[in-house]
Length: 405
Image 1 (cartoon, one colour):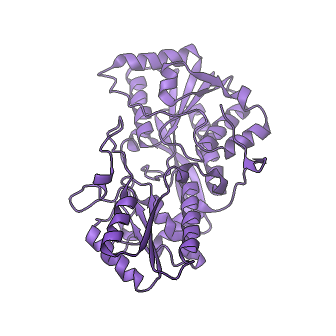
Image 2 (cartoon, rainbow, N blue to C red):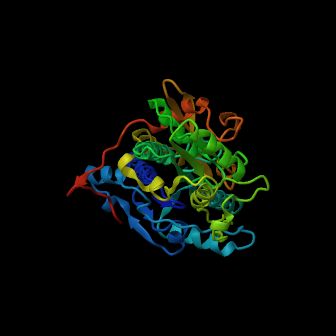
Image 3 (cartoon, rainbow, N blue to C red):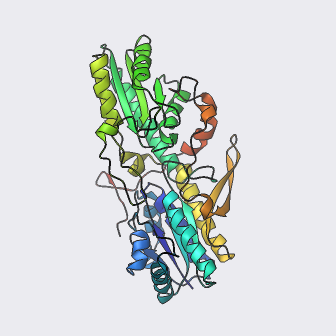
């Protein structure tokens, strides 16, 4: 039979490693004929946009480039499937498209919303007693907020980028003798894993960041200014890392006036702006030198500082997904199960995709200090294994080389 792989949601610098893992396992299995890549997620299935990956990733050199290429080489989408009881036709079209291409296993690499697609299509296959097609979800998200799995492919590399960047900003901020405040805005709608990971640089003796704010703790502008003033008594350069989704006591995003108010098809508000909001606040209330830095998409596409652990495990979970599908599993999401922090070890398992769909794993409250403005050292044992090792890019003319489809 043939298999197909699609990518969905926000890209990461490890999502292609999971694709590479499926590809390598399929080529080794002896049970797979063609391995298709689906362009632009579920939309590509509906529009029959398939590419033969075996022809594109044809040798070890290209395989290694695929591992090192950031973003989603197959493109992505943010399409929400309706309930099949409300719109049976779209599910019939997906099934027809898969059968026409001889595809018996469909792998969907994505986050919370992508697992919604996996769960819905799996439920349709069960209700219609369709047994010649299986679907498997492979997790990814830099937000690290998928339930059940210990961590998400892509998070380790994004965290490594955040740590490295915050450390470099700390070096720059301490150059001048004048007092200053730097606000670094990190991604994280409801879960603060990425912003929290910045605390790891303290393992190398850094004092920065002096403040960390997460969506899991109530945010107050007045408390923020008081916190900054307090830290300025101890440090000439104060660095605060803030999740984009921090909320006030009434449940509103703290920077709503700087946000568009628009939402995606899954009902998620487009966030950004907390950095600028707090920069203006510090300027008005304190009057010192202040700047805000929005890390933006660099957090998820900076493969030049990727974590080797992240890339290796992302490929491993892709290979395991193929094995799970060949063993007869369907409608599940692959998961990491942490077995030890020191030395770090994990195994790979499965869970029902519905357990991860449209739900979020929040940063543990016991790892946040009582003031709600910092991360406790207890979190370091979780973070540190995920950012270990380096994957050096293949270079040409002084710049990284990527696979482009």
